[in-house]
Image 1 (cartoon, rainbow, N blue to C red):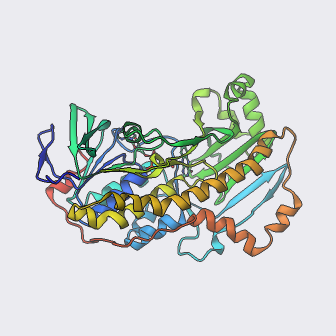
Image 2 (image 1 turned 180 degrees about the vertical axis):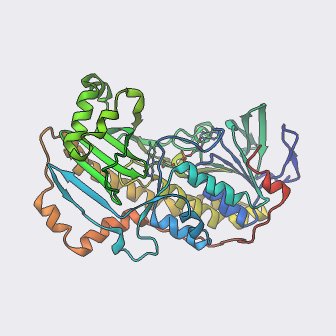
Length: 433
Ligand SMILES: Cc1cc2nc3c(=O)[nH]c(=O)nc-3n(C[C@H](O)[C@H](O)[C@H](O)COP(=O)(O)OP(=O)(O)OC[C@H]3O[C@@H](n4cnc5c(N)ncnc54)[C@H](O)[C@@H]3O)c2cc1C
């Protein structure tokens, strides 16, 4: 670790004296920043985009994440954001529907998934972290290279609105998502698996006769799977089809797409008329990966940068945030005293890799047993009777509910830090550079 922690001028003319630089203002980076500044750690977050606004990002806040915000006294404020609640899935096949489980059976203060646009969630985190003078968020700051001295990564160079800048810090966190530049520049290579599906995301309008739904609707049939979320003023739809067949889906035409949606979920027969142009649909090439090593001297990867999760179960945000909590717990004190050792970085991976591998194993098993069969079937598919009977047993119902709600290891915030806000002129300008 570099021992010179005196103020280091950056090229913007401001003086930077960070304990930690986080690349990526997604859920992992922003939650870690919030937890660290509450502990008095000076953090700079570099975010490539000019704001948090993105279309078609994960919008699910799981019960385990709501518990984390409860631990730091922010759950009430978070739940003030306009949101909808999901109490479980409803599966629909061949005109029958089935509710396999309900989160309300779980012992938790928050027995639901909170659905909130990710941009609103990130804005909330930025507002909360911005109440601490230790927080420095820089939008339009795209990291391009790492600064390495004597075998230790000690900063980054990034392209800002007015040219190239650099930030130096004793610890760099790569929280820059699935296409992580930090990971790539550090030559940490993930092992990739390619789940046998791709997804088209799009919106369908709410019609006056629609009945609000507090369940995620999962429909399957004719070799396609639908996942539908009620988003107040529209329905958000994921249309799943076998990997590598996007060109075929397109060549079959929009009429065929509209028909297959209406066959799986007849309630959307009228809604699909709104799909008139392929530009309304956004293709997500599904992948899943795991980085064998998440750290190097001066660097730690968390969230999607360390492991991209398959969309099954929608656990990517939850796992990214659990990494952030583990990192804040295990590194906060070391960062304040600037004595973070390699073994401290390794301890974060040790804590999080087992639950991550386990959920990825579970997702692969679900893909092979359930999804591949559903995508391979071109005839109407029914939900087998034994599955319905199995899920009538309460203990069987609760297992997938617990897994989705909490993951395999629930992190608890060990150092909740200062809840007293230290608002200063510097803090109030944080995030507006
Ligand atoms: C279409 C879609 C739907 C999804 N739906 C769900 C869902 O319903 N539930 C769920 O749990 N998960 C979902 N996911 C996955 C989920 O969004 C991710 O797992 C989660 O956002 C990971 O958080 P993260 O902070 O690690 O990375 P990200 O959210 O990817 O954040 C990384 C950030 O780093 C920034 N960045 C990237 N490169 C640089 C750079 N060079 N310099 C500076 N900044 C950089 C990016 O702009 C971004 O803001 C979905 C993903 C997609 C693509």
